[in-house]
Image (tube, rainbow, N blue to C red; front, side, top):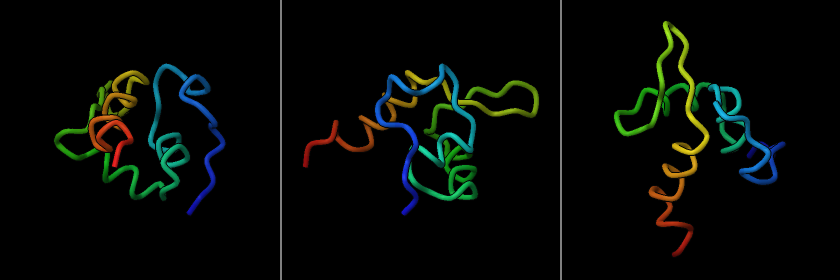
Length: 70
């Protein structure tokens, strides 16, 4: 697993690109691009560019991990 350079959500920029999402989640860039094409992933398309708003990403993580509870 890759080690994230981000230590808290506060360290993230307002918009995340595929490389940043890969770093945060500790996945490959290819996996990040696949995730960004998923129907329920909160992507904002600007021309050919895809970015994810920080707050939407945080919400997506919480929803997909049950808020971190087991």
